[in-house]
Image 1: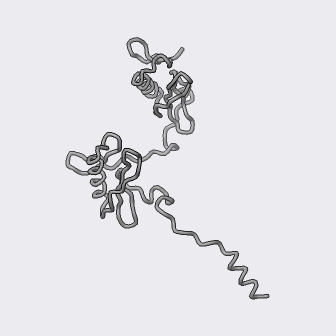
Image 2: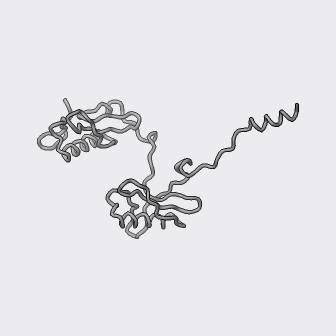
Image 3: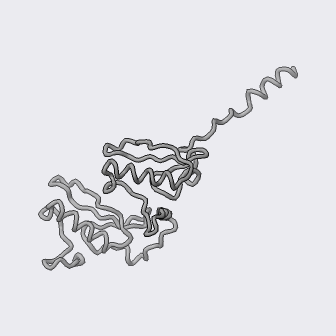
Length: 186
């Protein structure tokens, strides 16, 4: 009888967990202060996304600064500086750290009175605490988002710019008058 109990104890033991990969770890565990650079065990790995969105590895480096310089050089070599984030370099030639991410909970609340949108195509999103600018992209009512902004004035201006850029003035209500000044909806 005692032998049977010892076998069942082994079966009831929880399964061993596999080691966590870098992707499964919290972001802070593998992220660095530069774009395109990630911690890979005891080294720093540099990679970028090409024009097709495919991840391209540059290599592993001893310091994150070396990896960041390699990332910038790869973007320049492939002409991706205008469509990818580049690590900034100050006047002395030193790398500047990327800005810290601000969590949604750390964003200031927009007062209730200011959440009522005063412009066409602008909506306040409670979950992100941001204003969204949207415009009509075709005659079928398909909406396109032009971004998320801290103020509704910024959202309205971005919406107007997108509408004008794509020549969609006839399909959308505009927020500007003939002089180009933002006017609140009636």
